Length: 181
Ligand code: RP5
Image (cartoon, rainbow, N blue to C red; front, top):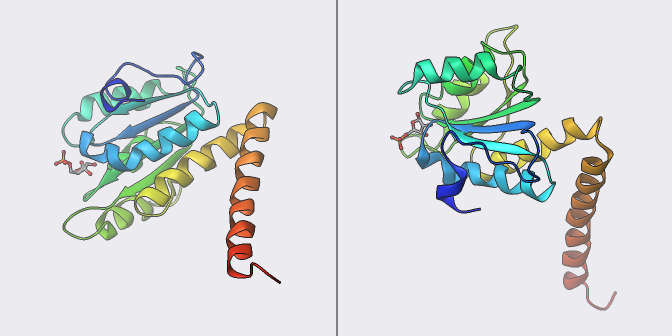
């Protein structure tokens, strides 16, 4: 998917269905990281949308998005932000839809600021926080798919295939270390 077609308020869904997952981010500059969540969800055939929702620059839009998330049928929200990364927590505060937070690697503090801003939520308002950067965005996509796989056999099959592919790569790499065991 091209950068231009993936961002903005218009929803994108991989299979044309109603989006079950929203990938939101505080700025277009977060897309380099958050595109990895988009790619994983596309690979698993999970209907999803990608949008820019800024906690600081568009707080009203963020509140509207969070308030309407459940009614619009979203089952998981993946929220990425960097620096003073308030988006995941502020969205989680305003919806019952589970929120997965991705700390974007910031320039000033390498993403430690993002991580701490996202992970240190008060009791009762959880944000499932992933790793900083690309691995976190990828894992947010995989984890969202695993959550949906609890009630969707098709997604479960595709996630299982993906995990077997990861294991195959390790075995293949091990064979290259010992070509003639
Ligand atoms: C945060 O500020 C965004 O999530 C982004 O990671 C960071 C910098 O945003 P830009 O100045 O690049 O738009 O709100």
